Structure formats: structure tokens, C-alpha cells
Length: 382
Image 1 (cartoon, rainbow, N blue to C red):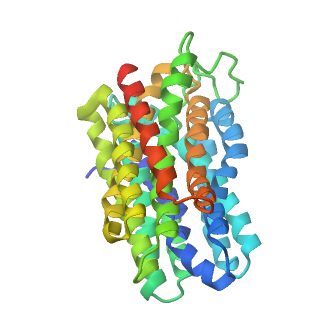
Image 2: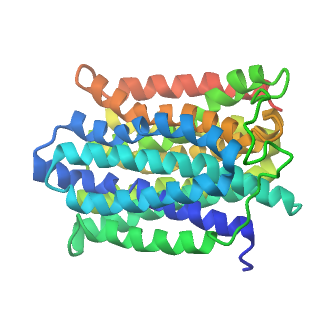
């Protein structure tokens, strides 16, 4: 396979994504080691999103002013440092929250700016595959990280060190691979030396962004976050919980990587199909939560949620160039990811509600909301 410039950037996104979910299966080890509650565990998973707010607020406009590469590469280096810091934070709950916050900042900046860099690079070479490459590499990384971490956490040596060290080494290689790729922001599109002045959205397109793209964006991470950060903790596994949590996360997020390329065939149907995956995914997990005898229904449910997240990401990224002004794709992409990462709060919401009601109830409500979203996305097809 030829390593084209956009694929080099894809490897960078894959490398950063590979580290974001390494802590997911290891949460069970942290729980026992530090005596953490279920609410604290889901909060640790979700604090990642808090790191995104300042990062995305700065990354998009900075990339539109100084260039995509100038922002994406340093942000990826922050992700390397975050993995190394996890090694030192294994005995401190407070430090884990701090490092998770830093990891969110580095990943959020890399994903938003890196996606713009990749899409623009592919478009400049005459390829329309940029959104799919970005979606596949990111969701693929999301899947690989927890699967490897889960296996090491259950049966490997140094479970709270080795997964992070392996990721840091792999990401350094990915940064070196992406380094030669040229800047994609052309001087006439808000040159790196000039501050862009035009509105980030094309005239009349903000309404589409707010009412059509934004609701779908929440699904991008809301679906897989629920599958890998909430459901395993709330439902539990009777045997080998660390390995099974990691493998479930890998299967769910791997489904997203496999589903994302379908955007080429589905076209405008991608968004409603993504929302439909949420209907069935949350529905199956609600049944699994209500009836312990069919707990395994959580597995296909999680995989459908992962597939829905991958399709939502591909559909959203494909729509962004149509609403962004010239040279402002970095800012618009950052806004998209800002909304998307709201979904990371879903596991914490589920954990909080589970203290006062059966978890099957909020899962069923989420399935119903996804049904409404499916209808809305079908009617608003672009």
C-alpha cells in the first residue's frame, strides 16, 4: 500500500487514538488498587473531555492562522507525554485525573486539526476519501488501544506501565512518519501569517451545522463511550473482567473502523443509519441490563454502538467542508469535535442515574432518543 501524504497523517491520528482508550480496561485495576467507586471510574473516563474545551478553543483558530501541521504535531507530542505520565500516576487518583485531562487536550487538538489537515491534503491530491480515512484511522486506533491494554492488564507483565510505554513508542514513530507531509493551508486561504477574518461558516450554513450536524456529532463519542466506559462497569463480567472489558472495547470500536468506509456507499443515508445503530445498540444493552440471563446481548449492542459512532464521524467530517468558509475548516472541525466530546459525559450520566434506578431505564430512554434522531437525520439528508 502506497503511503500517500493523507495516509501518513492517518497514521498520526491512529497513533494518538490508540492511546485514548488504553485506561478503559485498566480502570478495573485502578479501582482495586486505589479503592475507587464506580462514579469515580466513569468520571475518570469522562474527565478526558474536559481537557478538550481549552484545547479545541485554541487549536482550531490557531491552525487557521498558523497552519495545520504547526498545531497537529505538537499536540501529538503532548499525547506521547500523557502516556509517559500515566506510568508515574498509577498510585495517585488525583494524578490520574490530571493526566487524563492532559491526554484529552492533546488528543482533541490532534483530532480536530489533524482531520482538517488530512481532508485538505487528500482534496488537494484530487481524492474524496479524506473523511473516510480520518474516521477509519481514528476509530481503528480507539479499538486497538483497549484491546491490547486489556490483554496485558489481565495476563501480561507491568499492566499499568507496559501498555502506555508501547503506545508512547508507537506514537513517536507515527509522528516521524507524518513529519514530512506538507502544510495543507494555502497562503490565499487565511495564510499562516494572517489572522482569518471571515465568518467560520458559509452564509446560511450555520443553521445546518447547529441543527443537523451537531446532534449527530454527539453520537460520535457518545455511542462508543457508553459501550466501553459505562456498560462494562455498570453491568460487570463474571470472569476475566479486565481482558473482557478490553476486548469488548476493541470489538465495539473496531466495528466503528469497519463501518466508517460504508459512508462511500451509503452517501446521504450514512447519518440516519448511524443513529439507527444507536436505537438497536442501546435497546440490546437495555435488555441485557434488565435480564441477566441474556447479558451477552451487551456484546452485539456495544458493537452496534461502535459502528454507529464510526458512521457518525464519517458522515460529520464529510459534511464539514460544505459548511466551512474557505480557510476556516480548522475552526469548524474544532467546533464539531467540541460537540462530539459532549458524548463522553454519557457514561457518567448512566452511572449517576444507576444509583437511583435500574440502568436499563436510562438505556431504554437513550434508545428512544436515537429513534427520534434517526427520523430527524433522514428528513435532513444533505
